[in-house]
Every structure is written in structure tokens, then in C-alpha cells.
Image 1 (cartoon, helix red, strand yellow):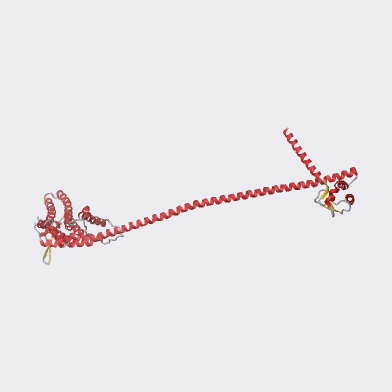
Image 2 (cartoon, chains in turn green, orange):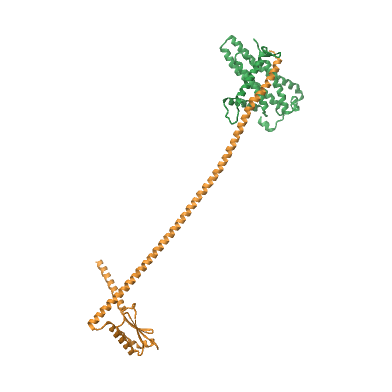
Length: 231
Length: 256
């Protein structure tokens, strides 16, 4: 039994092996982009929204409201980044119920890539918000002694993000596969339903943690009175 | 559990591409649509507020106009009522004046009719009296009424001769006025009687249809006369007395 789909090579392109994880990621990308294009292709202000457009508006506004609850300075770029994380991970985890489909989030390479993206995004958002010096200053706060701990903390946050998501999704997929062999009907259905719930919760946790990390990196270390009252 | 770094790199690229794709085909259209709809709703709300304010202003104007119309209506009704009262008073005053005028005219007419009737009655009474007296004189004394009138006046001339001479003065003239022309014999006798009392006085005879039957002899400011007017007045008094007495008797009779 394979624990990861990275070893399943689907085809090779210019000598580079393309595994099942990458192909499944592409499938998810096509699904998300295609659905978005189909729903938003004839978007006009004077046309009342249909049920699909309303569904997308509810999802996007839900993500936006979650970000607004966390960060003081909500920005469109943070929505693009955290929203895409959530949608990608949630779609990937929901496709767990499709027979023969290995969710890319069940691969440590995918979760590591997402964690790496978060690891890079945090300083980028921080530098954009505070400036290069301002962001580096956060590593020596509250004192210089905390510098190594802050650096370690930065990396462990990424690793914990990757391992948490990978462990939850991979374990769900493995357990479902084992139970399919032991008790072919009842238990796999229950476990898959549980996996759907776990997948959505993990997508939410991953996106929220990424937003929190980015928000903490962009937050003003000396907030004004109005900002304190807001928080 | 192993990490394939080529897959990691590919997934990072895939994720970044997915971020760009979703930004292009999902977030921007949806958020722009929401923003446009919110802006449209805000515009409509602003238009609704403006329309509401306009409606309130128009309502205020119409209320003012209505109040003004009501006020004018009351004023106009009051004015019309006052005008109608004035016209009624004028018409009533005119009617009262006309009635008073008609009443006065009617009273004047009645007075005129009474006067005419009295004059006719006097004339008829005088005529009847003269006729009866003439007939009685002719039957009983074989004399004419004119001769007896002349004789009566001549009789009254002698006691008044002094007064007549004073009134006549130096160049006085005697004028004898009668209702009808005197017969020649009566004229001659009157002239002779006057010459006896006042010699050489010229005398002239005149007739006056408005004068009562009889004879009036004037000299300057004095006169000697006999007419039936006194008799007619006595007759009127007698008739009135009789009428009054008849009314009283009738009243007593009615009382019985």
C-alpha cells in the first residue's frame, strides 16, 4: 500500500516525471478555474445574480469576513492568497470521496509546498506592510535574545502546517483504504463522511493559521488607540 | 513518508498559478460585481432619499397651497355673505322706500279725491241751494235771487259807507264779482244803491267761475259780500253733525 501518490508516475515530459499528485492538482485547478469562469463569464451589475453566482458570492464573502475578523488591515491580496489556500485544500479534501482519486493534500510534498508558500508569503506581506527594516525588527522583539527562537518559530510554524494537513488527510485516506479491505460497505462510508468533515476543518485551519501568521507579520507593533478598541 | 522536491516545486508553481487564475476569474469578478451592486444600491438609496426629500418638499408646498385655498375660501365666503347681506339691506330699504312712497302717493291720491269730492259736493250743494232758493223766492215772493242778493248787499252798504270811503281813497273803483253774469236790472240797482252811499264812484262788473255763487263788492282793501259758502259750510257742519249723531245712534243701537 502506497502512503503517497508521489511515487505514481503518470507520464514524463522532457524527461521530467509527472506524478499523480501533480496531475490531480491540475485537475483541481481546472475544476476551480473552469467553474469560476463558467459562473462569472456573463457577470453584469444590472443582471440579478443566479444561484451559482450567489453561491460563489457567499463563499468569497465568507472568506473575506473570516479574514476581517482576524486582521486589522484586510487587503485584497490576503484574500487572494488565503482564499485560494482554503478553496484548493477544501476541494482536494472533498474529492477524497471520488474512487481512485488521491487528494494532493494527502502528499507531504503538496502540504510542504503549501507550507513553503505560507513561509515565503509571511515575510513578503510583512515587508510590504512594514518595510524591510520594520519586518526584520520583529525578529528581535521583545529583545535580541529572542532572535533564534523567533527564527525557529518561523520555520516550525511552516513545518507544523505541512505535517498537520498531511497527517490528517493521509491518515483518513489510509484508514478508509484499510477499512475497505476489512469491511467493504458500512465502515468506509462512515469514514469517508468523517473524512469530508475533517477535510473541510483542516482546510479552514490551514487557511486561518496562514492568515493569522500573515496578519501578525503585518500588524503594527504599537497599535493606535482606535486599533486597540477594534481588536 | 518522503518529500519529492520536484513535486514540491511543481506544487508551489501550481499554487501560484492557481492564485493568479482564481484572482482573475473568481475574486475580481465577484468582488467587482458586489462593489458595483453595492454602489448601485447606494446610488438608488441616495436617489430614494432625494426623491423622498423632494416628495416631502412638494407635499409641504401642496399643504401650504391647500391651507391658502382654505383660507381664501373662508374669506371669499365671508365677503360674499357680507355682500349678500348688504344687497339684501339695500333691496329692503328700496322696497321700504317704494312702499312708503306708494303709501304717501296713495294718501295724497285719497286726499286729492277727498278734496275733489268735497269741492264737487260744495258745488253741487251750492247749485242745489241756489236752485231751491231761487225757486222758493219765485214761488213765494215773486222775486229773483239776484235781485234779493243785490238788495241784501245794498242794505249792508249803508252801515259800512264810512269804512268803504276810507278804504277806497281818492281814485278808488268798485268791483262787483259774481259767479255768473248779473242781469241788467240787478246791475243797475246795485250801481244806483252804491251811488247813493258813495257818489261818483266808478263801478265795474266781473265774473269768476271759481267763486262761489253770490256777490262780492270790493273797494280798495274793503269788501261787502254775500255767498253761499257760509251756508254750504253750515250744511257741511250739519251733515257731519247728523252723520256723527247717526253713527252714535247706530253705535247705541248696536249696543242694544
